[in-house]
Amino acid sequence: MIKVLVVDDSAFNRKVISEILQSIDEIEIIGTAHDGEDAIKHIYKQKPDIITLDLEMPKMDGFTFLRWLMNYSPIPVIVVSAKEADENVFKALELGAVDFIPKPSSYPSLKLKEIHHLLIEKILAAKYAKITVPQKKEPKPVPEKHKATRAGLPSDYIVAIGASTGGPQAIQYILSNLAPDFIIPIVVAQHMPPTFTPLFAERLNKKTHFTVKEAETNEIIKPHFAYICPGGKHTIIEKKGSHNTFSFIERTNNDKYIPSINKLFSSLSTIYQDKMLAAILTGMGDDGTEGISTVKASGGKIIAESPDSAIVFGMPGEAIRSGQVDHIFHLAKIPSFISLYTTDTAKKKSPDKK
Image (cartoon, rainbow, N blue to C red; front, side, top):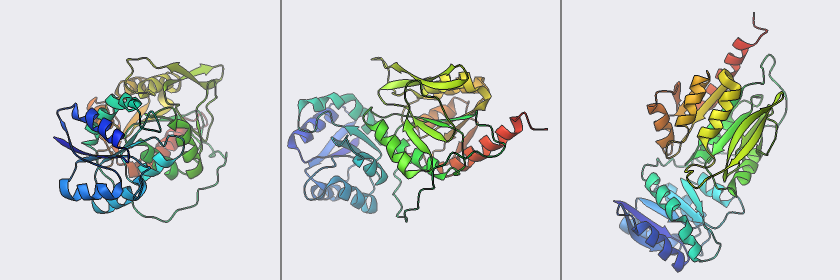
């Protein structure tokens, strides 16, 4: 039985979220709280397994509560908040929340029932989430963005990353720790709603030396750029003349993972073939496992995040079980591997190599 504490300053929202979760036999609502202070009392008394958390609350808000929680009683937290027009959700993820769901409305409304399936799915996944307590560290200056290229390193390679739950933190870590002169373009498929992908790209652009942006229709893939696949639709890559460009296809009602890592990887492998490195990071489900089969068949290489660092080991675990993964790494080792692998491989295949 998964014991859940629902934290929201709206009595209506607490009631609707509780009713949604109580419809599943595996979930038990052990209490509700109207703010952070009230939630702390429940934690000491009932010891929940998972918490759903609103960010905007009186007295102790969601951010203050998260800081307390991660210091004194780390528990998986799913943010359920209407703050979809700013970076507050990403701040909550940095503070230790494992995932988030945007409320359909900024005020109490029956529209909240629209998150029914997503909420249940994320609660069941959070049961297996590994909590990583954020470490306090001095902020380091972001290296200057530049377009310099490494001598002798071809730029016709690609790095593709797929992630879901826990992905925003992992992706930021990788981009922040690649060498400033790393020029190979990176394309990221992160399961995320449409409102958040441009904000995610903007945040990464500010915090890393890469030029990070949300991909646009017919945009040409360029060196030293990192592209975030837009939410709400699927991203594929097409060759137009001598350029590789972004194109998009609409989702269907049967699509479970959006944007699809499978579709992205498959389209990239067709064009880049053995000049592609694909990475499957933390996340629930099995998106990416089908896509890496085309990467493998085309001569590309695949890495997966290890269970030691993945917040949720669902996606990388499924990929590993498929037998197609070439390397398994802790998140801390992935940036250096990407840099070394792409550099060494490109130089070995360079036509100038004697």
